[in-house]
Image (cartoon, rainbow, N blue to C red; front, side, top):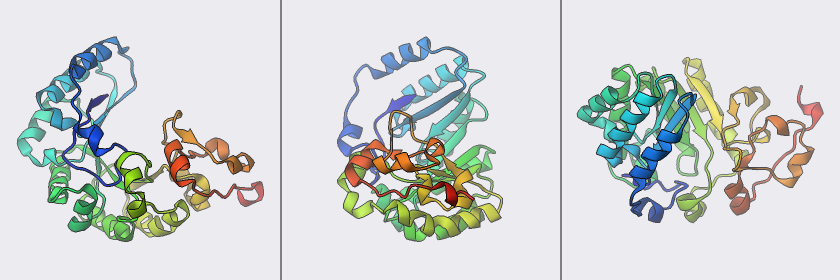
Length: 283
């Protein structure tokens, strides 16, 4: 459920462009009401996203209330940057309006405020996100931390993992995510792109820090040939089926059927190399 394209951050690697996030969408909320009314009541899972959904104000709470009342047996996830949730009054209303057990998925690009704020291009955003996560955990809510891997965040990722252990130990999971090269990400590719074959070596220590401390970890948007064999079980097929693409060389890979591939936009723009897995290397 896409609530709004507006956002109070302007993340340098966002797959939406700054222009798209500024556009007005007249009549959209009325269309969204009709869309929700047409949905079957047995939808197993609902993801609420944007932009930053909470910026829709009263319309956000109206849609959240409609969803909560209609889909009483569905799982819910809210994708948010957590900044609005630093306001305890907004959080109180959100928890009162929304479904119980909703998962809050929040990006922490780095535990170093200057690095996080450089990535969001919003001064003070780390402090607000940090407060929002702590507010949620203090309210016994389920929180997923998302770390989007870029050239700007990669060198602080282990330090960020330690910060999570020391400050957000009750989080449900931490997901490391490779970028989707569209929008701002495409525009800023020279500043942010890091090759897939460099990512895992940089984040392995961070994964170990989290797992050792009992925190569940997943890898999103990384092809299996770029992940050490012992970590394949945490590499999720996370990309929507209509966005997944493979290189021609992937046809020779013996694990292609369980590999999540990578975004079509990333293949077109960055043309990343692949290393097809041969059957003898599965052991």
